[in-house]
Length: 211
Image (cartoon, rainbow, N blue to C red; front, side):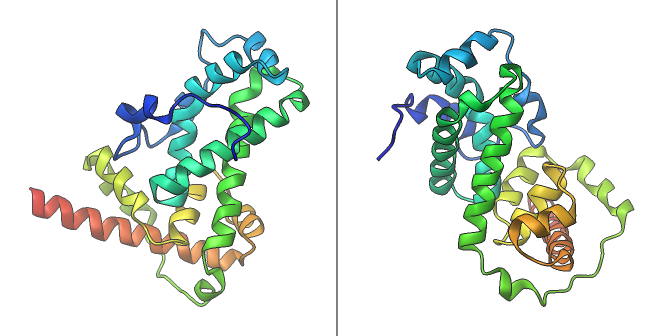
């Protein structure tokens, strides 16, 4: 049972159907020029029109985070909805309305982290060990179509996908990831290396076949 009547999700379909809008969503999180702090304040007071405006402006960026973390549209939409419900329920606690984007981002990430803790068998990953990938090898990404990288991140196995997203895209450290996911720091590091290795193998193969 949803507590808020959000605008139909189909409004975002042209932007998010199939692949992500952007690999780095920081630009999506900047306060839109026509979203005033008064809109955030009104939304905190229960104004449904103001809430709809915030959902419309921030929905796509938050969905990008959710689908990267969950790997599928159905769970991503559930996490997105839960994040906005939680944000609107506690919006009165936000002391600086202008910080709404970053605050919502953290709520969304927390929802996805909890989802991952409940759906990934992290104990089975504790013994995984991956050979570290040399830092200079990251240069191979530069000539790869962004959409392909984004799609392959979504297709990573559970465990390494979440760690990769948190470390590479959300600027979490391995110690923070380990604490939030309830795993060892070595597990976080090994799953990140596993993700990098799989991404390179899969993307290189696709580029070779398509080229």
